[in-house]
Image (cartoon, rainbow, N blue to C red; front, side):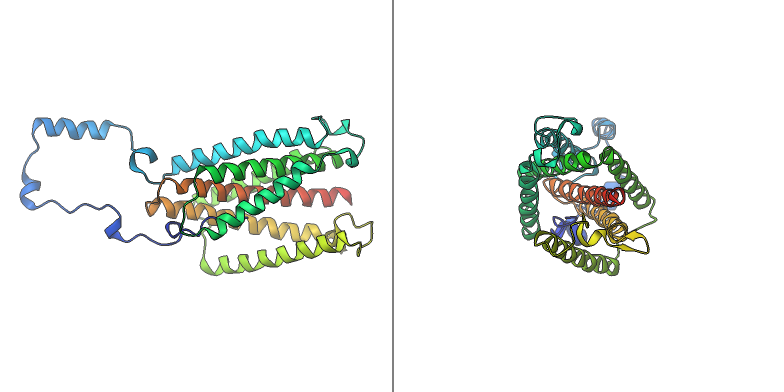
Length: 299
């Protein structure tokens, strides 16, 4: 999930000025000496040259992080389309399969296991720097999972994928705009509250799945405990709104980590970790919205 890859010191600690690449001020005599014609031309050429990127500096930049994030999403979408096709038994249109028993669940299961394993690798590799290989593998796994689960939901509720994608874009765009404008920022206290709440939500989700698998709940509760209504509102919708808000805050943590990484001069390789973190959070928000809309439409 969100921010599991952002436990590297470059994303959490401020870099000491001594490591920041600052140069020693020129002596008074050096400042008073006018540069020669050749030196002046060299200086003007440096100013006219394009800004150094990640390849030239070896450091993480916003532009490089954005490019890597876009690359991972492109891979996920391509793999997702393939997963969608195989999940629906060789069809792109969900109405071409008779019922869900004709669907192929293998891409979804493989993708879910893959994302879990890779997320654990990111979570426990604190000091090492996973590069492009692991990030791309995660994008492939997410593509299998997202494409498969989206196809299954679309087969049950026509048009739900478009609705969930549109709502996700709205949440992510609003969060990015508020962060860029300085209206919202990460705080240590809020981060602890959200992390504890996310752990509680994970326990609730596992309990709900267990009760459904073992037939403890009535069959009319399609989404288990989430389908139980409180004052006419499904519990899954109430919880879903809170979880989406928590996901938005996790996205703020992701943006903040990228900002710290660039400010602290993190190695360019860590841009892949940043891209992974953003993708994990975006997918988390999308899946929660997808499930919340499904609960509403099933009722």
